[in-house]
Image (tube, rainbow, N blue to C red; front, side):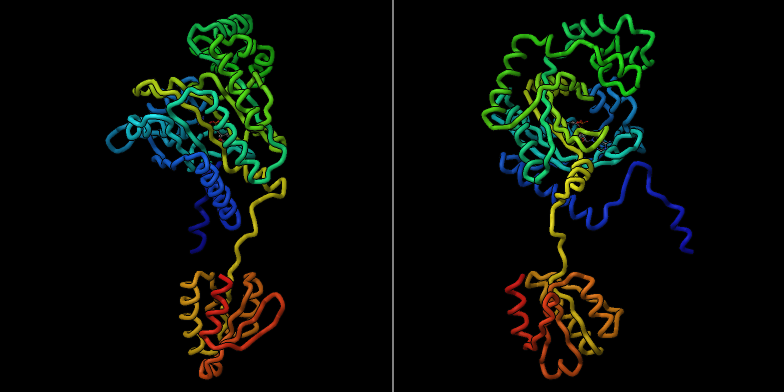
Amino acid sequence: MYGVFMSYTLPRGTYDLLPPQSWYQRKVLDAFANMAATHGCGEVVTPVFESSQLFERSSGETSDVVSKEMYRFNDRKGREFALRPEGTAPVVRSFLQNLAENSGLTRLFYTGPMFRYDRPQKGRYRQFVQYGAEFFGSAHPSVDAEVIALAHDYLVSLGLPGITVELNSVGLPAPDGPYELALKAYYAPHHDELCPDCRARLEKNPRRLLDCKVETCRTIAKNAPLVLEYLDDDSRAHFDAVQFYLRELGVNYVLNPRIVRGLDYYTHTAFEICYSGLGAQSALLGGGRYDKLVAQLGGKPTPAIGFAGGVERLLAALEEQNCLPGPIPVPAVFMVSMGDKAFNAAYTAAAKLRALGLTVVYEPDKRSLGAQMKAAGKSGAAWAVIIGDGELEKGEWSLKNMLTGEQRNLSWEMLAEELAKKS
Ligand code: HAM
């Protein structure tokens, strides 16, 4: 009978989240919401599935995310959808549908599950949770620095040491831009050594070659020309100004001209925040400017910038550094009762104490005093409230401090008053 359930297994690359991990995740996501609120961000929640085309047109058909990793499906009417592999395109879609008339800067944040069919490994899942922010409506370089600072300050607020802000500018990608031409010239003699995907990418989008995970392509990419050497004057000026504002905010950063980002929509600023302890999956979060995406998806030209991070990598880093949020909540009160009448009284008393804001638990199936006291100790509760049928008749409730062992008899009113002070 039980064996029936054993045949269902967790899909590869996914995980169940149970206490205390589920509590850690909630804490860090709440902390992100609070940090985003200090920048005036409101929350946006979009569906977990969207039209496949939304991602094809934004992330780019040559990106791994779209070409290999998307969970696609047709609904009953044959419409093509995809589980969202990332949050930016859906947020842009929602901005266009709901907020495009906003003037000034629109600041949004989000958290939620994303889906990518990639080879699972440490820090890489097929369903993972991102936290992110997207700012629409300003091309001012101070906004780039503010968004980077939001991401950076959030990680610092969690007490995570060993993080590095890595900064780059990808300039203005264009089919025959100077950097694209330089890449084509560099790769031409290597054509036959490239993987089949990269051979196709060389024609369509040579920047994507820098992002290929195949070993031979990675080796060739090591000596490829660097984007910073091909920036136009405006991109250079913007990049310099972003760095000025980062210094103003006291955010330390290093330049990393090798940041390409795996998605096609970026212009100008690209950044990642890395943590050295995570091995291959060192990017805690990544983002950048995408000044052309809103227009590309049908809106009026609207500059924008944002970032997103994976909560699993963040929690792994926090665990490694011993700075997971704490302390894990424990019940305030454990109800212990001896006898049927006392059980009923304890049961309703628990509800009254909960209404005062206390966490109250009990063990309905453990009948002996010893077993219940043992369970009380195991629960971590600070207080045990003990009542027997005899004491109930006298109106005498016993309150035991589980830490010191001190025990006092009190009327129900006094007990409730005493515990209310501790809620
Ligand atoms: P991304 O670099 O593809 O960018 O993902 C951002 C972060 O999500 C990564 O740095 C990583 O922490 C996490 N992540 C990505 N894939 C996985 C995975 N398979 N398993 C676990 N964690 C993962 C974006 O998604 C862009 N939308 C970021 C952005 C926002 N750019 C502008 N605005």
